[in-house]
Amino acid sequence: MEILEAYDLTGSYRKAAELAGCDHHTVRRYVQLRGHGVDPTEPAARTKLIDEFLPKVEELVERSLGKIGADAVHKKIVAMGFGGTDRTTRRAVAAAKESYRAGNRRVYRPWIPEPGMWLQWDWGWGPKIDGRQVQLWCAWLAWSRFRVVIPVFDKTLPTVASCLDATFRTIGGVPTYCLTDNEKTVTVEHVARIAMRNPEIVPIGRYYGTVVRTCMPADPESKGGSEATVRIAKRDLVPTEVNLRPAFEDFAELVEACDAFMAEVNGRRHRETRRIPSEMLAEEQYRLHPVPERAFTAAFRAVPPGR
Image (cartoon, rainbow, N blue to C red; front, top):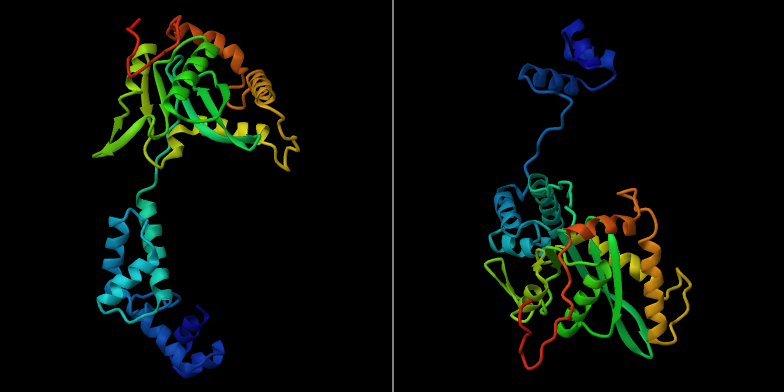
C-alpha cells in the first residue's frame, strides 16, 4: 500500500520507488496489477506440469473413495505422459484426498439407545494360561451400559451360543437385537453389501427370541460400545507392564478376575449416564424378554423345538 500511495502522490515509477525504497519495476508491476483489478499482494498463479493431469488424479481418488495411494496414481499418470516427479504427484494426491474428505465427511449423530433394545458383543485377546491363548467375550448392554466379560479358549459357534446364554442369564433377560462383528460364525459372506447369515446362528437367535445383526465391514465405530468394553477389559485383565498384574496361575483365577472386573465396572458411576450400570439394569430388565429355562443345545445339526 505504501508503494501505491507513493505512486499516487508522485505519478512516477522511479520517484515512487525512491520514496518506497524499492525497485521501479516493482512499482510498475503493482500499479499494473491494480489497474487490472487484481490484488497485488496475492502471488501469481504459476502453471505446473501436473495441472493437465489433475482431473485424472481427482477421478482416481473419487473412484477409490479416497483410499488409493500416491504411488499407484503416479504410475497411471506417467503412462499418460506425465513427466514430473513422484513428489509432485504425492502433493496433488494429498490435496485431492483432503478435498474429497471435506465433501464426504462422516456425519455423527447422537445415538439414544432404548431400554431392552440393543446388546453388543465382541472378542478381545486375553492372557495366556499354560501357553494357551484365552479369548475374552465382551458384551455391553447399550442402555444401562452393563458389561459382561467371559473368558473362553476359542470362538467357535458352540462357544458363541454358550456365551450368549450366559450373558442373557447374567443380565436377566434377552434384548431385541444383538450386534456384533462380521466373523464367520455370524456372517458367511456379503452379497451386494448385504450380510449373509451363518445358517447355524439363525436358530440360536430364534430360540432366544432375538435378532443377530452385524455392523458394516471394517467399521468398528458402528459398535463402539463393545469396542470400549474390549479395550477396558484388556487393560485391566491382561498382565502388562502398565497394570503390573501378575500372570494367572490357572483358568479359575482368570474367571475370578473377570467376575471382580464386572463387579467393579458395573458398580461405579458411568461417565456419560452419571448413573450406576447395575442400578440401571434393574430398570432395563422390565423391557427384556424372558430367558428360556433350558440353554440352547444342538447335536448332529438338530436343534431343539421352539419355546
